[in-house]
Length: 90
Image (tube, rainbow, N blue to C red; front, side, top):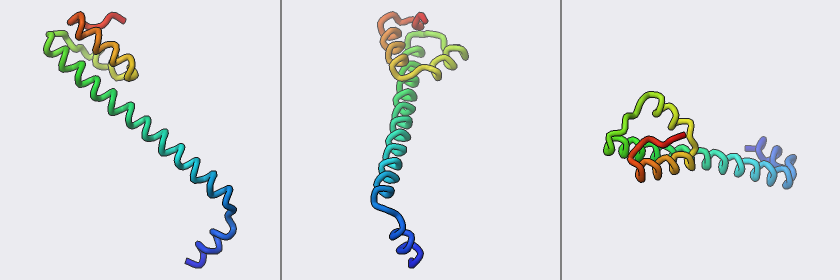
């Protein structure tokens, strides 16, 4: 415990604040990445369900393609599949 007290006295307040802000930025970035992943996973599952419902073949290439799309591309594909009942054109 004594070591922590001495260590704490040696650190200045500005450095502690900067370290805390950097940690918060790292946490926020990790959360945003996690959130994008969850959204993408949900959109991919929804697309898979629609393809099954509309008898659209989900080839290995199409499945691989979906994993490279960002959430906006997945949303666009979902809308296109819903409207046309076909796999989206590039």
